[in-house]
Amino acid sequence: MLSIDRYELRVDIHRPLGGIPDAPGRISVSGEITLRNSGRHPVSRATLLLYRLLDLDDLGDPDGVRQITWRQHIRGLRDLPELQVNVVTLAFDQPLGDGEPCTLALSYSGPVVGYREVFPYAHDAVERDRMLLRREVLWHPIAASPTVDGFFSGLLAPAQFVVQAVLPDGWWGTMPQIPSTFDATAHTCRVSGESAGLSLVGGQFEHVQSGSGGGRVVVHASPQHRDWAARVAAAIRVTTERLGMWVGESPRHGDPWDVIEVPAYWGSEVTPFAVLMQYQTDDRDVFREAAHETAHRWAVPAGDRFCDESLAHYLETLVLTSAWGDAYREEALNDWRAKLRAARDASATPIEMGAQRGHGFVDPITRLKGPLALAVLHGALGDTEFLRLLHDWFTSSDLVSRTVSDFAAHVARAASARFDASRYIGDWFLETRELSTILPDRTLTGDAVEEAARQYRR
Image (cartoon, rainbow, N blue to C red):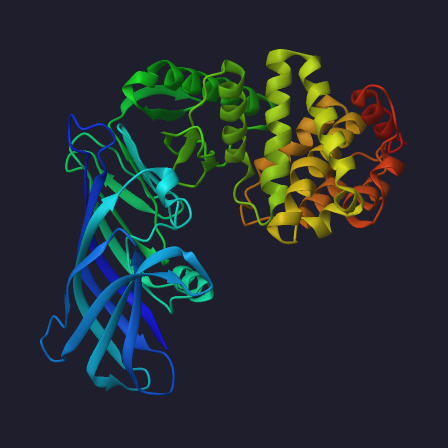
């Protein structure tokens, strides 16, 4: 079988043609890719997969040593025929032996149209004002068989790569999740590392800049959403100031913040290199989303989703309660409890076990049970001791990737003797117990949380 060892590509992104509504953007790519026979048997044929709207323009051995013939045609994946890809079949005049590499020079190009058009294949979007190419997008070839399993195994296979993306004049770019550089003058984004996927965000953005907690926040948004960008920057500033006052400065507080607007249907995420924030029209939604993504800056590095998602949800709730009053806290607590009761398996699963399971099971644990456990801990300790405990956790010089087990150990070590830490940790983190046995029924969830908190006070 063949694998991709290395690829170096130059990606040129061309804006939609002016004056033509919904005209597609175009991508043209050129570069070199090193394939390797990673099996024991000689290989005389190979398959590369491209997104179905991309055409291979040229391919060959850059040194002229090996003769390579190729053909391409659009076909469905064998396991899922409605998902079509451009299958490029190569034939080598001299088979590749065990471990033998082969370098290909190639170029390909094509349009990238709307988000809904490509959703079954990859997550990307070209709109009038911005373009999004996420790490799944197939604008680099994948060495794989034309099957669903082959598609994803090829997509996720690591490789050493260097990609330079050239954007239209006036655009902005980043590669979230992967260290990258962006030259705002040359409009060039360069990324290198070990991954078969990459991300690019670009657009004809305006930039709203503000200072926050000693850091710089720049919100990149389309010109018609200038007010939204200003509200995001203000929400980030408020959240940063309040969390900094309560639990200390974020371990990443000195890093510049680049917040990039993405479409409302996209979803937000925070990465070590950028925050992607989906566009919202409602002021409360804007504040809530900005507070949540900002809270993630305290939760990194995290070794599991409790130390990331649960803590971010509870920090977000603290900020929004301070802004909107106790009614919001009750709303959040009740939402967590109601949804967790509907997911009975998750309700009875210890947090330490749930945070290590597959993604489909993790969310009810880390987005519902985790924040509820933190609310009970907060009620049992009181504001002063609880915030001190979080301060010591977030400002620790030990910034290795920490897990829920580390957090439980921190609670046991840092909480005062008037708190029954072992019972609390057992009930929420270690033992299989139904939520109803530790969180009593009450009309107001806040009252139930307070009553649960009293169980752990000595």
